[in-house]
Image (cartoon, rainbow, N blue to C red):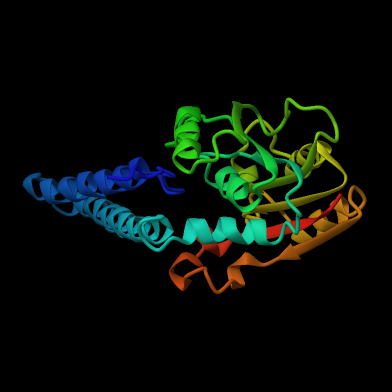
Length: 263
């Protein structure tokens, strides 16, 4: 039986399980409250427990279905999002490419398969809370038969361990907002651009409509325009491959955008 790569999911199963467990606990506490005496005094507590149970279980159901849509074995949306990032790169595939925040290696491996003459470096912190690892990336690259042209290494996107102008192209997706070591996302993107050669290409996808991370996308584009020779923005929320179910404020498709261009 052919071995299959494991690219995991942007919504960790432990997160869905945590929501479900919390919902069950709140529901059990709600029913247990009927065994207590206290009369009207217990009613506000009971109402809070009921509301918490409904919210947690509803959110659990939403995230479970969203996870299925994103999955490579389900709706395949994760792969389509990565294809969109690479489609806007506009690279001839000759030289070196860096995937910043490579996770399970999906983007780096897609790039290596799309550009057979390229060398690809995937960088990730592989921190707590994600179902990713360097070993997983290397195994996936081996299964996809691109292991000789893809290298994975641990690193911090806020301080990439590469000299200026090291790469011909750079990609990243759904990563910058997760980098806790650099809350200034403009500075973080500038660090990503630092390792790209003048005239090199970039394509970065992230939750650019999330006000908690990016206050104004127009201001961001204006600030970056002085660092590059060409920059464009795509509203990924309007993409046909993104199901309406994922375009809510809670879903990954509800806040995603893409910046790409030439340094």
